[in-house]
Image 1 (cartoon, one colour):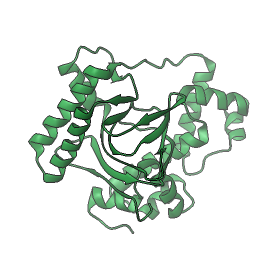
Image 2 (tube, one colour; image 1 turned 90 degrees about the vertical axis):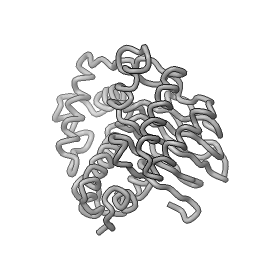
Image 3 (cartoon, one colour; image 1 turned 30 degrees about the vertical axis):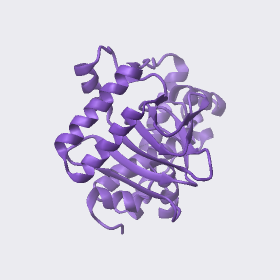
Image 4 (cartoon, helix red, strand yellow; image 1 turned 180 degrees about the vertical axis):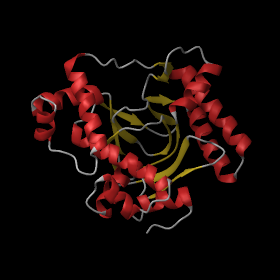
Length: 277
């Protein structure tokens, strides 16, 4: 992260299963990636551009960028001045519980539009972050529920269920299992296709159709997710890099920063209070 850029990615123990982020990015470019959680990002300055659903989306001051779990997207600044925002990342179970109690949405709840202009909701996101900073558990929990409820009522609906059908979907699922199990030493596309009894291009098409990413991009995403789990458990960045299949810590640093938004050492310090080894 450049010296002009600042970001903090942390958790507050009284908001379980919710990641928190406050950031000012200038040159940052987020790789195409997904989150296991929801993204609720409130922009305060500048404009964030993120590719989502096949088109570029634009979120400026007073608006929120909203991304559902497992949805591929990117992110960068529209202008040289960069963009500043605060974000909460509630787990799907957190949003589902709030939706069940406060909305009429049936099925798996999610956001319909990836950008919504709502300065009031944007302000609520920043109030959640401020309450977490101050250790005010009652306010943080209350305000999170209020903002999620508001956004679901304004812009919520049942998420479409991705139904796994056909030989291509089954091959994609098997390929994903292989990559998860052999993350540290994955096969080439040709070898993986041969193991699954298909051709490289057929596998590539099936995987992109099922998961929205080609296998190599999905694998980088998965490696960073697993590295986060290891760092959360106290593993050092160097050991985590090797464990998930990156050649060394600088490779982990580069990919981690361009997906999570902060370097792995800074991430680990916030989670464990320990310095990286």
